[in-house]
Image (cartoon, rainbow, N blue to C red):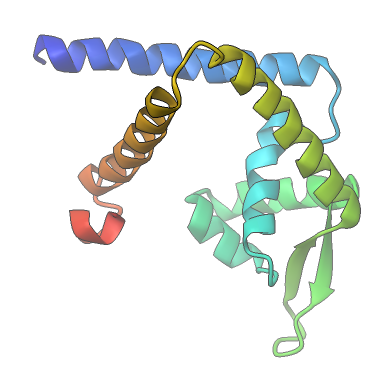
Amino acid sequence: MDSTAGELGLRLYDLVRTVRLLKQHRADEGQAVAPGLLGMLMQIDKLSGGCQARELAQRTRLDPSTVSRSIAALVADGLVERQPDPSDKRASFLAVTPAGQAALAESFGWYGDVLRRALADWTPDEVDALSGALGRFARDIEVALGNHDNLEAAR
């Protein structure tokens, strides 16, 4: 591995460590959404017309059993509800409840405050560059791992 790739690997390690630190601080505050479930709740919310667990597993690239346990926890916490699928009586749609919406808003507010403090000395151009680079990096890693047909499809 060349030195550039090695340095990037170290920065990725730092990023993962930083994400764990954020989650730990968030968990210590006893928020409405467990840190490990926030991403799942965000995905359900993103699919605002409702979604089935199968679709959620595909979108998150998680094992269906992991998705099922996460959904059960979100339902038990009153953040997500199951609604009957009129076209398939055996299936149900998942929808974020008003309590789930409030929990998402509170979580986004908390993370937004942390990011504003962390990036206070950054210029808007630097923030835009970081955001764009991270988005591109995530898409290109998926392509490199074969999770897209080609680079253009990922962009």
